[in-house]
Image (cartoon, rainbow, N blue to C red; front, side, top):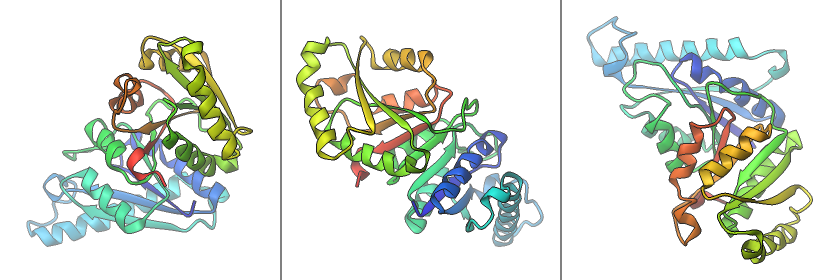
Length: 282
């Protein structure tokens, strides 16, 4: 990876994501881009003038200063030498502001916090995070406020075993290569192993063809609900990261493993969620 984009609303919860963004940048020797999106009508911290353009300039200067202070606060000697670039964008929509920055910067990954506390009408939480999971053209790493681990050693990839998952797994391995993680792909269904055997064997062959079978363990978990199955697995195992592929529903399995599941699970775990979008898998 060459560029990592981190976005913040300057809340304490959003700050939880910065150490992980810095760790990724350090591991990959990548640029770290810090972004803040603001809206003038809600920027009540900058009431120095009634002139809109001057208020915007003041807001930009103050936000750039805060971004620099944030970087200094969380950086250390271990990240010395990292190239850091600050971005401040005025936009009434956080999502649109972030997407415009992604378009301009072309980062390899977006790192966000999943709960905010600013005065902005849209903050990095709830509908904004969900919308970014659906719309971002790059992988989104969402960091919960009660993160349980800062390491990426044990990874759970929830899959319904489609060919697009292979491409996502290849990107995942590239992103986490410096961490040399153990990746477990879990297929959750309400069918027994015999019913799923052909599909599992087909997916194993795909992994083998891409030379991924040595890095990945594939398991089948029986459950009447994908969400309940994931909850069960996560509660019984110490995973550091949950990975899912955001996709449109197509076929019987997708009635269970539909696109909204990614958005629901993000708020039901204390581990980071890495989401790939089916439409932007390279």
